[in-house]
Length: 309
Image (cartoon, rainbow, N blue to C red):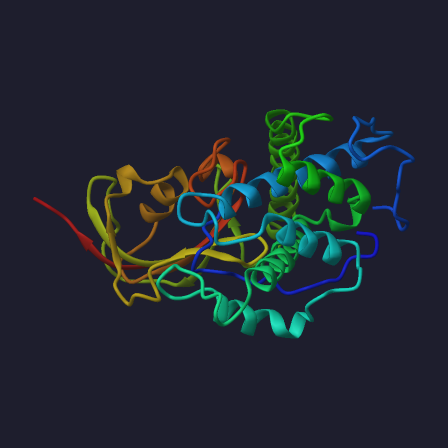
């Protein structure tokens, strides 16, 4: 991505709930308030991604629990300054401490400690960080046209639909991300399947045997007690039983196809690592935090099989 800082993602967990290249900046000679045309796909998709993120940010910070707690203009300024690699009013080293003071554990804000102006600007900086991290995780950060990305964010935050409606933008972003997820998953499995330690079944499921147990193999209608962690192919964990220390109990018949297949291969006491193409996971629609067409990785430890006679 042209002229963008590279960052480590920052997660806010108090008030914020999750919603959804060229080497030179392109700045068309057009009035920002008027509709403008795109010369190529990268310009259009950059605008759409920006608009989607801008509208999502507006919705989060103007929702029932957040309305009045933030200054939309300051949030927008923070995002724009960061993405344009401009002069930041607040140094990035100060953002965490500012937000820790402004956002209280009770879900309110403390304007006696930090002004709404500064708290909102800091929020804008973190929103820009999150956006860059999301683009980098998809491998498309270098393909973004920064000027169009920023103009899209402005349109989304200001509910300006002169160029595209938010519905049109979100449909294009969803389609683009689906194509990326599908392509990345196929490339990952093609490379992964060539590793000596990885086995592939007729269904396309790939797996590694980390530890082989000696107990019984479950049927689809048995109950199983497992510890597990699910990962995206970039290594990010999206769900795990490990932090709680409490294993999960499932009936294989009610699980995704890849889990059904794997569990009915595993002996009690085994630990497998699964690599599931999207059709053996959550398919074309996804589920919760899992986007459509996602190839997923699971570590599963089969602790116990409960068989009812």
